Image (cartoon, rainbow, N blue to C red; front, side, top):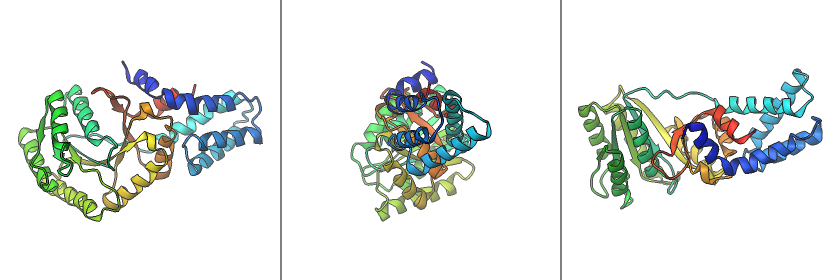
Length: 298
């Protein structure tokens, strides 16, 4: 199944909510105040967020007026263009050797995401090593090892309670010695107000920069799509502490809150790099803005 098919199927809940509502609004033949009020309400109640919604509405009004667009179907095309522009905020280059460090709160699916991405990179002919940097959760290392076995990649780990930075050090040393293309680092789930755990992430960053300065190093925050607007505050907290380069959005297939994707891109000016679209090992793909918008709006 191709990416568009996966995304189309995975976004069914979002399409059934946002897409259906937007289509109903655009059935109007006249672009009047009532039309824009209805569209504004639809976007806000679809987890697009107030700030992002107001930008979209203002842009749509300006562009349709400038182009002398009167018909709603033509205006819908303009809306899609605006959304694609928002989601194309910037591109993240996956240059190799590549270190991806995954952070986020508990329960968002970091370890599962890493397991899927190990398989993703293997499918794309890259050599991969996994690092079990979550030394607090008892089952984290064994869970990551199971994913490693499924993708036939090495997992570097130490005992429960070990210093995560030491595990990362071992992982980098091993990946460099083996000439690996990709190093995927798992970390313990944490809340932004846990100062000691946030300091731990900073220490991991320092180890990476010192031990493999030539590698392309990216910090990715993993977000659960079903949390909607709460995802925004999570990103802000981690960005302030360690810097976030891009986002991985999980459980998009189980959410009707896909509108938050637009809020994340617009308000935080961060790209969405990967999206999780199911529970299978191959149910993760790189995000594509145009495909996403086409999948939710006819």
